[in-house]
Image (cartoon, rainbow, N blue to C red):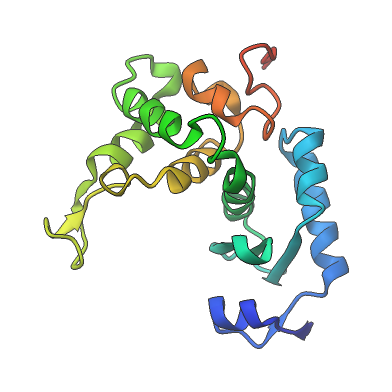
Length: 194
């Protein structure tokens, strides 16, 4: 272990973290386990990547956009996919109305009837409508109101990416296309195979 970065101390309150070479190796393995495009992997390799303890499967992470830094608490693939999706979306959301397109696609997905997309549909439904059984003392309703009310496209994007673990077959084409460049099989022209 090495001394934690300022961001690791501020984000997780930790004093130690994994050495950079160990973290790079873990992320390189992750890139091979999931259908990231070669372009997104090239982009991710330009970022700072940090992990606190890869010997355990802790969840949680941060994307520090101003520092171009992805952090994960431990060796949980879902958290890593989520934070990498944030990193990818950071600039992409500002292009060609992508942020609004993501929110519109999630609203449509919330009502998607095709059972092939049931997992993503349930996530989208909660993002749009909130979860009345999940208390939130900061909400005027008393429960978590979802992401749409605050137009939180960045969490919708990252949440769906990790919610389907990068498997574009689990997203309908009108959502899938927004992940073009991040995951293989995302663009409307890509062939998605089982």
